[in-house]
Image (cartoon, rainbow, N blue to C red; front, side, top):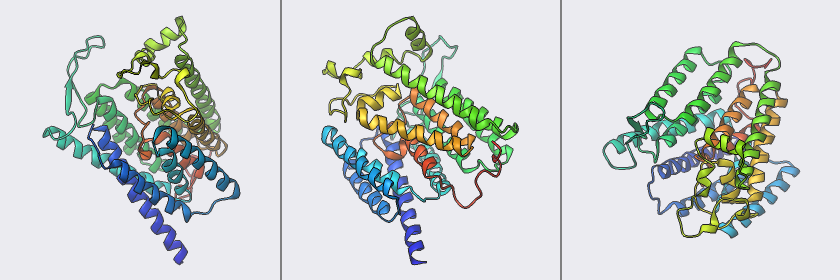
Length: 383
């Protein structure tokens, strides 16, 4: 009994500290300077390490932990970033955790923080409340709202995460009107932000979840996994080709479709021109000079953290997809696909704050596979 209480206490501490780190990450998205964040993140690292220490792992998991920590140390040595160390402890601390409880807490922080930022930005205290959009090419010429975040696209990305958390919490037997309300709110956020990337990816996820609920088919997991594998591979190939500076008619057409995100790779705001995010500047464990932000998320991972951490990241996502497919959990594959598509188009989920790196966190939650006491798959057993 005492051991169980100790584990429960460790889980509660982990969730509280995770929410604190998430809040700091969201504040950073409001362009708020956090001079104390470096020290806070080291404190968080110690907490995650302490929680991970009370978990039980197999021999293979312990060996992998040592290897990943070694990679994290090398990343810190080359870049000065401790995320490689903190992320490993964080993700290992998630083992045996009630994921529903975890994502419910994340949802509360996302919603409460956004409402707080909206109030503060409307009073001119932090961030940007709204911007005047002067584009005429899409028939839109008006105000776009960011409600305190650094851009309208960031607000839409946070709304997407909140929607994903709702689907994680209620995938088993959520009333239809909950999905209807979530869809309505998401459309409202699109009207406020005019963020087409977020709207298209969010609409695809909503459509996928509705299909799983309404259409009974035993091969859903196979179909969605095939779609995920094809999309994931295609996005990775396009990203690598862009980083190799491949120029042809097809790449130009893809660049137009994704709103010139490949063209953005040619821009570096500092004086170090050789630190562009091309393959020749990728390092095994990152570089202290590669600190610019680019929308193409897969390129950003290789450029910012290095080849080895990027491969570990993508292997984690792929492993989660394989496990979800083998378990017949098509709903998890839909969410993995949506988050992967979003990362390809926007690097907003790429952050030094681990909970903001949502694709990685969700992938690990799928790999650990503990979603609470409810019987998993009650609704989606045949899917």
